[in-house]
Image (cartoon, rainbow, N blue to C red; front, side, top):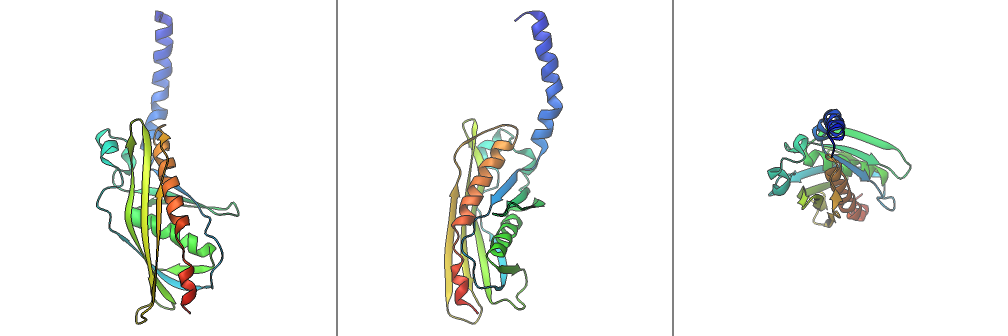
Length: 203
């Protein structure tokens, strides 16, 4: 490479540094494409989410290479895409709050209103986050989401369980976009695999 070309390459690289820094500073964004299925009997439910993960949001390989810096404290952004094309953005969420918000939106599309309290609720929906992580596989990102749900009403013997497991394919890294894409795929698969039809058993 000639000196003028080396100089031009260096100038171009330096000009890109602010952009690369900006990309690296963004929190990971989960884009949940909601396809919840057939509507349920309308009503109000108490929605609770418990985080029982044994690992961090950012996996050991990504953490060792200092990837996904802005989400190493576990914070994420969530955009929900509804079948009608509408979008809802909520920023700066913990993993459990992100799952709560995504399932609230999921249930809303089914005709069910989710609240944090129990007043007026026909059932209690307890979601356990067993796995929610993004890591590196070589130079690509991969993510896993594993959720379990128990539906009941205190004082009644009947309950209903459902599980959702999502694993992304490997996605190329570009800033943090590869991690966001992998997490979005895993969360979307896991949430859309949950079956809330057991709520119809509660009046």
